[in-house]
Each structure stands twice: as structure tokens, then as C-alpha cells.
Length: 429
Image: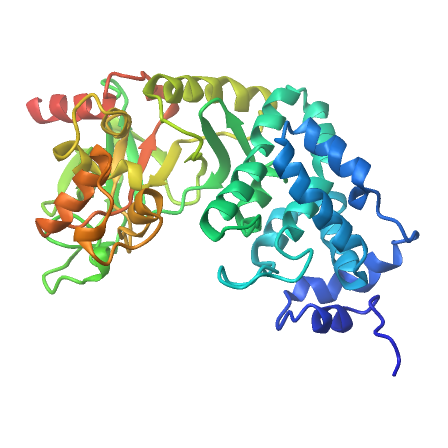
């Protein structure tokens, strides 16, 4: 029986039990493999793994996990060929790399099954292979290597999260970490910021004199009586209503979204000449992400936003950020009724103009706080005020839900709850 030809994609897919590969693999595979001119891949060697992990300031136990994973990959021709292909597509043919890697398959097995050698950390090893190129790309722009290293430190964070959840070193977050390694996301202090385009059904306008902001639902968006999207919480409302939006020469007409993230059923009207559009679907935005790296210090979060205001215009002057966005369980305004006013979560969410989210659910709340769904409320841990608040709210018949937010660069005055103040002043006026 002839040995498999691992220069051919079907042989690799069969050997690794990958049932379906992205179309981009088939299109590029032969050309990429033809460029592999040596039996050795330097990024799979022990010396490279040790040196690069040291550059990222990884702890010794993480390095001890990565080194044998790389050894297994270089000793398995199917894995080695796939590692070279992935490295090429991410770090050599960089144009469009983030989009191409979006749907690459995991090679790890379900949590209860030990994956074959080299699989659990395969994508971690591939990402590690690109560290020198990422550093050089950032350096060419003048970006401090400390920012790069801090950004890429998420690799170890998610390796550790895999070990915590599954009892062994594993990494399943290529879909997320591809942003970090393709110059699309940067960690600036406590928060991370990602290049994005506004994809929610809202429009925002600013009054030319008072500088007050109003956020309106886009035409056709559907909401429940409580101001949430009609499909939030996994249930639909028979009394759901449909928003109408119109921006004419004389007037802007629509349904306002309150600063606390509730759509108002009664429409309003504003003189068009007095307002300017500042955000619409498709506009460039910076998505904010809150890394799971410990307490969310309110002051540190403010410092991150101030740093972002300087960082992106300096290093990416062609990117005209229209707003900071964030979509998170931490923005659920219901926390205001269950936590103390000085709690970091409460102080944080009050800084933004909140927005409801389509199909909002509590999945992220329970994943982050309880490691997954809570099926028995009596058995749920309640060792923190946050855990107790979440369980109490559910017992009372409530639903937690993920919430969106907007923060416009001109409004950054951390600690002043700008949009709450604007709303109060607008109602008074």
C-alpha cells in the first residue's frame, strides 16, 4: 500500500479526520506546499519555541506544554504540512488573513476526550510561529513592542483557560486570537480595541450647538413593549412594534434609544438643520473588549480609552473612528438594581450610551460567572456579591441579557456619566 502523499490536501484532511475544509484551503494548498523547500520548519524547533515564548513572557509551565506539542507536529507529516500552510496564510500572505482564518476548524476533541498528540495546542503553536513577523510589522509602524507583547499575551491566557475548563492544556480560540495576530486588535492597558464596522440597527445624531447626542432605531427594527428587541431572552412579544426612521431636509423622525438602552415606542422629531449625523450602520468603529485578566478597575478602563484616543490616530491615521462600541454581559443595566453604586461594573456601564441587542441572552453572564448554564439554582455557588445578585434576579423571575454600548470620542470624560447627563438635560429642555 502506497504511503499517503501529504503534499496533497485530501491526504492531510483524511489523516487528521477533518471532514470539511474551507474552500480557501483547496484554492491555495498546492501553491503553498510548493514553497516548502526544506524538511525543517524553524518555528517547530525547541529553540524557537523557547525563545519566542520567552519574548511573550510566558510562564515556564506554558512553555513546557508548547514544546512537546511542537515536537509532535514536526514529527507528524500531516500536521507539519498543515502547520506550514496555516503559517503561510496567516503571516506570509497577510492580505485578508483575518477573514480567511475565520472558519478554520478546531483540531481538538470534545472536553471529555483526549486529543491525539499535537492537536490540543496545534493552533497555539501556529500562532506562536508568527510572533516575530507581528513584532516587525508593529515596529515598522513605530508601535512600542510592549504593546505588541501585551496584546499577544492573550495566547497564554486562553491556553490556561482551556486547562482550567478541560483539565489539560488546550487551545480552541483561533477564531478570536486571529484578530490579535493580524494587526486588527491592540491591548492598551486594561482594555482591547479592535478595528470594526458598526453593525447594529441604530443611527446617532449630535446637536450642533449643545453637543447633545441622540441615538435612534433604524427603520424596520422591531422591539417589545419593554424596549428590548422583539427576540431578546429567547421569547417573542405578540405586541412587538416596528421602528420607523426618516431623515428629511426639514426634520429627523424616529424612535429614541434611552441612555439605559431601551427603545422608546413614542416617536420624536428634531429639526434637521440643528443636528448632524455622527454614526450609521457600516461606519468605522473601534470595538472594545474586556480581557479576563482580573478585576476591572474603573480608573484603568478610563486610562485605556484615553490611550486609544492617542494611539489609533497616531499609528493608523487613515482609520477615522466614529465611535467606541462594546457588546458585553458587563453592560447589562439591570446590575444597577442589584450591585452597589460604587461597584466597578455599575460605574463602567454608566459611562456609555447603552443599546439593546438583537437576540440578547444571558449565556455570556453564566459562562463568565458560573462557567456555564446553572440548572439548579440551589446548588449554584454564591460566594461573591455578583453570583448572589445573579441568582436572586433569576429567582425573582428576571432575565439577564447582553447589552451593547456606544461612546463617541468627543464625549470621553471618564467618570462623568455624560450620556445620562445629556438625557436629563434634554428632558428638562
